Image (cartoon, rainbow, N blue to C red; front, side, top):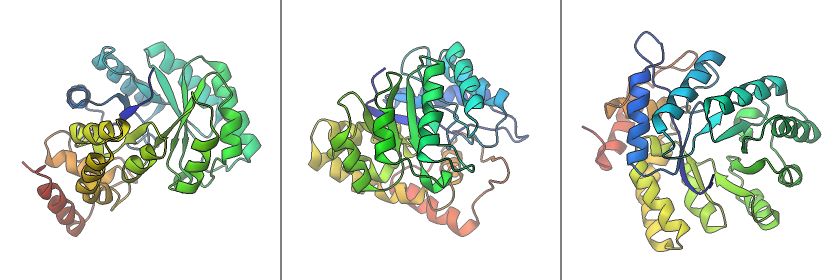
Length: 293
């Protein structure tokens, strides 16, 4: 599995009754692949992983794997703040045909750096599924420090990190010190271009839910060293990157996709729709990029 390019952290479509809309999910997988993305990441933060049941989580993974039909890798979100639960879910994802797993740093229980190391190592020891660590201290309340990440990088099943700390100096230090075969991939759309220029491998993207083709083009330019073209694309898309985080993810992206006719604007509590002024501001950004119907 090559971890380079745009990997879409896909939304989980719901019907009006709150159940998973498998038909919309299958169509959405095709939309993403036709848009040129390098891979799909179901049931991460953007897929509302905190509010789907374990059975639903696994069903979404199964549907995405089935619909993808091997055209691109599927990196399944199976992380937890319970190490055993993460192991169980990861083993099931492997049985379902996932190509890799995204493992978020344990949230709420706030482990030490040693606890982090033991958590990810235990998961990596339990299955041979390639593992991507997900560092997002804004949601987990704990940063995975570079010394810990470098210890993890020596494990044969731990292939890289989705870096969403927003800390460019930390990311630069990690890229400078990491082994050649350990990838650093951006967890923030607005840092994808600069991180690739610094030695990163791509982005696990929210924006590509809406614009898979444009994100793929921008990242391709950056990876090919066509920095002027990549920079122009970055600034053209920057208003959307910002708008997507005008409210808690995935509320804005689901609203945008509903305006594009891709999914229903349905969330699971405690997430709920944006207020009208934020919707109008988001619509204006969509209109400026030609995304409104």
